[in-house]
Amino acid sequence: MTIKEYKGDFNRKLVFVGDGNNVCNSLLLAASYIGMDMTVACPEGYEPNKQLYNLALVEAEKTGSNILIEHDVHKAVKDADILYTDVWVSMGYEEEETKRKQLFKEYQINAQLLSEAKDDAIVMHCLPANRDEEITEEVMLSPQSAIWDQAENRLHAQKAILYLLLK
View 1 (tube, rainbow, N blue to C red):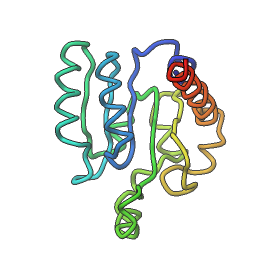
View 2: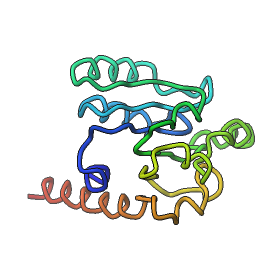
View 3: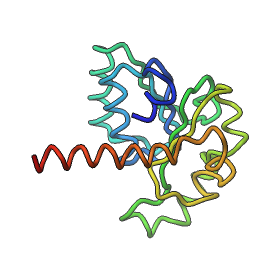
View 4: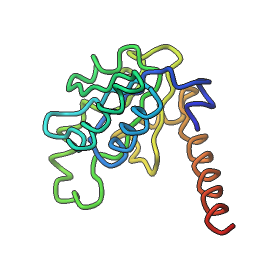
């Protein structure tokens, strides 16, 4: 909803930066179903779920989207329309916090990384964010941030689901 609001269509390149977690897995499937190109920029060993990735590849063949995994974050964000990230330490991985923070520090969305994407690229995060970890406060508050509109749109989508369920 937010991508459509900001970009007008889905003929875009979405780059998920960070851990190939549940958010990344959902985005892979969504991108493949709607024909949007998506690259996952993650460290080796932190790729998305293999089964879901393979399903996304099958769907991408039908819709014409390109679905990729790239370990070089700088290569991944080149020509990106949307940069999307999520927390590095999801629930259940708290014991790996120190290791993950060290491993993912190259995958932080900051002003430098954003400058390597398209000039009009937007930044997204499903919140809550750990400011200055996976994304800098500077980028979160920048004119390229769609994070707050994304949060608002999520509220509207959830209200619509509740309406349909209670109808």
